[in-house]
Image (spheres, one colour):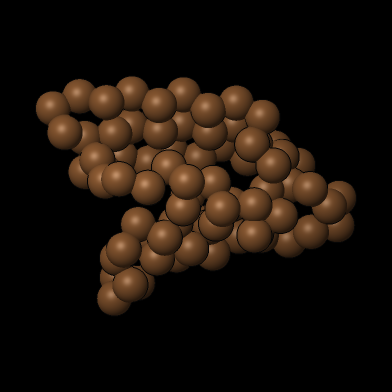
Length: 76
């Protein structure tokens, strides 16, 4: 199943790495990444695929994991 993820946030050192690790831990394989920086902000667009056919990952779960990896632990 294909997944498209878009993120826009303040540029932080290590954010891309933590994002990629978080997606990998969810069983999401990145097939394409487009990263754009402008005025201190990053816009990331990922085209991805769930690693396991029967895997069930919900958009809210992806969002929560990515917010956590970006350092927004208290936002739900």
